[in-house]
Image (cartoon, rainbow, N blue to C red; front, side, top):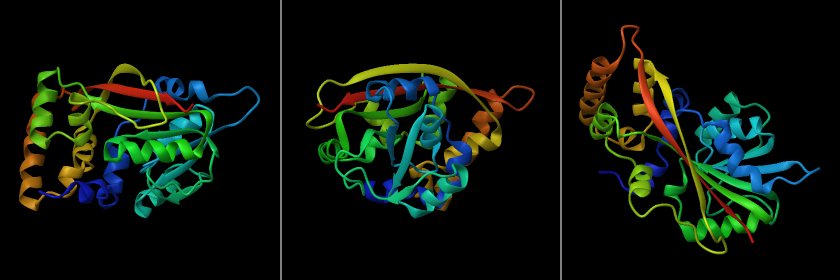
Amino acid sequence: MPGRDEMSTSFGAAAGAYEAGRPDYPLAAVEWMLEPARRDGHALRVADVGAGTGKLTRVVVEAGGEAVAIDPDPVMLASLRAAVHGIPTFVGTAERMPLPDASVDAVVLGQAWHWVDPELGAAEAARVLRPGGVLGLIWNIRDESVPWVAALTQAMHGSHAEMMLAGDGVRAGEPFGALESRTWTWTRTMTRGALLDMVASRSYIITAEPADRERIFAEVEALFDANANSDGIAELPYRTEAFRLVRP
């Protein structure tokens, strides 16, 4: 099985599937993360770290933020620039951001903090944040209380994010204090193609052997066929788990 480091940097090989298959983030959840960082009369400068193809970046912009995007993979950043125009992009990681001290009001990570060293990532976020700035962490997680969704996860294997949220939970190091959290529930309408793109964008699938990928896709297609309606649409329930921490 591939190692964690290989999996964490594998997404560029499936940038198109990631952009097509991954869900967007609810605007209300992103606005909630950013709310403590807003200052009257000042632009809200936000670093989207692990930005990928810009799924979270575009919602930050919709919420009124001036975004910069950081990702370790230049291929993902190229996809972001094609999807979200006018956003400065930089190669970097949560542990090493190419930003000056106290230069942003918020640092946000979507589907990414589980790849980050929580001590080093928190220290680096504190460096680039102004006092009172926000570290916002967000994940879209399928609702596995629905039987066919649980079967879907079993077919394609759980992610590092899902295991973290179901286990020890979210953790960030000093100097951040109390962690606030909120959950949003919603449903995504999925075609067969969108579901297969979502599966193809997962690190386990990207790094799997060809025979394993073929088997997983066959199981996922069978699940879709058993749960889609007569129009070829399946309803996939999600929870969005959002967290925020304020820099002292």
